[in-house]
Length: 85
Image 1 (cartoon, rainbow, N blue to C red):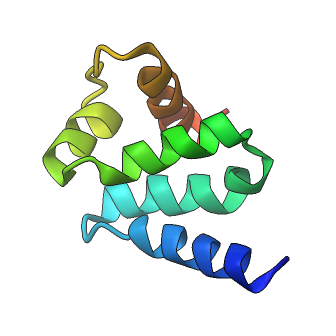
Image 2: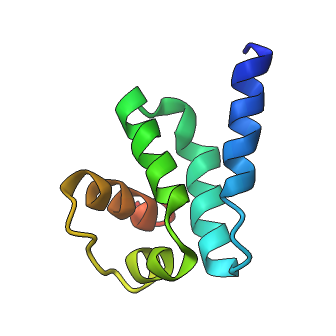
C-alpha cells in the first residue's frame, strides 16, 4: 500500500473511535474485518456513516432506526449485523 492509502486508512480507523463502547465495537470491528473488501461506493458510504453525529449513529446502529436513505441504510445494516452474520 502507498503511504497516502495507509494514512487515509489510519485516519478512517481513528474516526471509528467514538467514545461510546458500543459504537466503537461496531465501527472498529466492521472496519477491521470489511473495509478493504468494500467497493469504492461502499467506502464512500462508510465515510458518510463516520460523519454522522454520535446520537444519530447510536439511533441507527444500536436503536435500529432507519435513516430514510437506502444506500446509507444498507451500510448501517451491514455494520449492525457484522458481528453476527
